[in-house]
Length: 195
Image 1 (cartoon, rainbow, N blue to C red):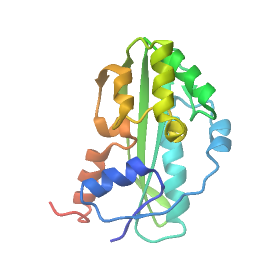
Image 2 (image 1 turned 90 degrees about the vertical axis):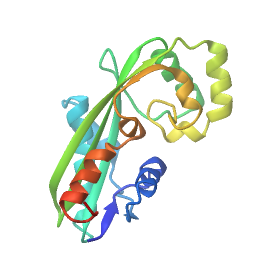
Image 3 (image 1 turned 45 degrees about the vertical axis):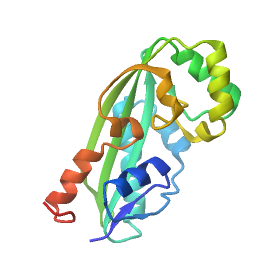
């Protein structure tokens, strides 16, 4: 059975590649901003789940196979959700807001088949950001901007972004953007991967 990742995310593709999962990557082409605007009443957990489902179902209506849709959201301790930064200045603002605090990353994955969801899983990771100086933020952005422009939270945990944190609670895969271990378990259950 074909496995399709409804995403062009480099980190999600790398996770599946590293795990030895054969898959095709197809852009979901959903209007995330409109979906988020329509679903603002949802909790961060439920919004990540709804966006993952939207991506999976959209691709599964067009293509046969098991379609993995995934989404991640960053929510500060006060409940504020951070989106991908639109500029270096906004990235600096996000990092300043995150400095010395905690935030949650909600990563959801939904698997759809024949246009309907058949499985889902949502996980939370809690990240503790160390106090960040203005000098550090500027040097960090000199090195990482614009690469992190597509990263919610303004970091790549697999790169220099790891220096932002004093402690991480939860799965590394959840931080990367997809709860991989439950996905692998489901694919084994379905007989797509060997047991």
